[in-house]
Length: 115
Length: 110
Image (cartoon, rainbow over all chains, first blue to last red):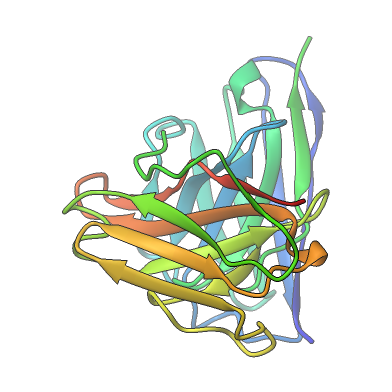
């Protein structure tokens, strides 16, 4: 069964940067839109960004626009999220998910922004 | 920013039917399909219902989705203890040019 595996999370100071990765295995990746969704501790799901299948079209939530960049490498079956100017309110588990139906989801990677 | 409103909680005894609502607007549910996601405690979300009422392979037929106008609903019939989880609706929003998730509903089996 195919899966998505996120990595790259960790502790970063306010104002810092981090790059998340989402590796796809055992499933079709290159022909699907891909998303990043985050969940702050004890809170609900919030859509962050998505990218179309060839990487030429992207959208972002207002809260991350200008600070985060989504990209993908279809030769490596990998999705990325470059995050800059991180704030305490960006602290969350970040999930990647495939397609307009968000299926499947990855297991998530925790990003903690704190001094 | 959640623009899809769900009740914070719902509960029932084993075997009962529980329904969760998801209220939106003409820019999201009114024009676009709704997905439902189940998040078991301490785990990642999982797709439960897609395109308003379709079930992915492996999802029991106890789970059903419906939509009318700018609202959608998830029904769980024959409630089981393993259904205790958080449930979220989601849809594309034409005004925000992005996806929106519901506020989430915690289902408790009494």
